View: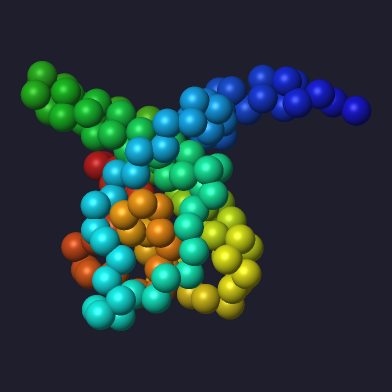
Length: 143
């Protein structure tokens, strides 16, 4: 039987390696400032687990790294590495799918359409129709 350290070693160079790193650092500062607003129709369903928080933060770091590289290339008159941008986009999409699957399983409501789920301040999961300008999937990759 394989050991956990072998699993972590295998994941190290993948997006899951970043998720694991964040998870074990336990620095889960929520980047979302929008409060739960029940008067506006938010229905509180639960709160993200620590691993789900790590997934959100990993996706955010990947997107920020990609966007910073794009801005740097633009500033220096260089072409953006479209291949790396595509890989980053795929990584964020995979993490997003993992996140929403985990949320569905953890809140016990797998029938809820994830397009109506969003994350609010303090890692609260709500059922709501998000404002059009609010991106709930943490993708944010510039291409």
